[in-house]
Length: 78
Image (cartoon, rainbow, N blue to C red; front, top):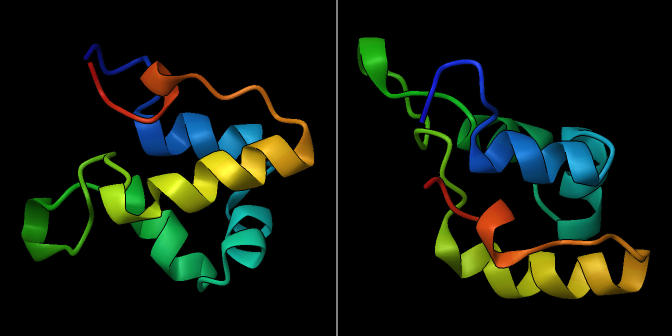
């Protein structure tokens, strides 16, 4: 993916209005949600822009309830 394109985590976080909002909806800490968009370089604990798949069902359900248009390609880096 080109560097100037948002990764999956960044796209989904933006659709929900930010990491704090998404974290609150999902019952997660904001740092957990922020970490999805970070790389692992330098020994970090990021997820390389990937959202862990175990969160997909809750994110999809939350998008429906919040009236957010979410496509399958929003959830993955292609």
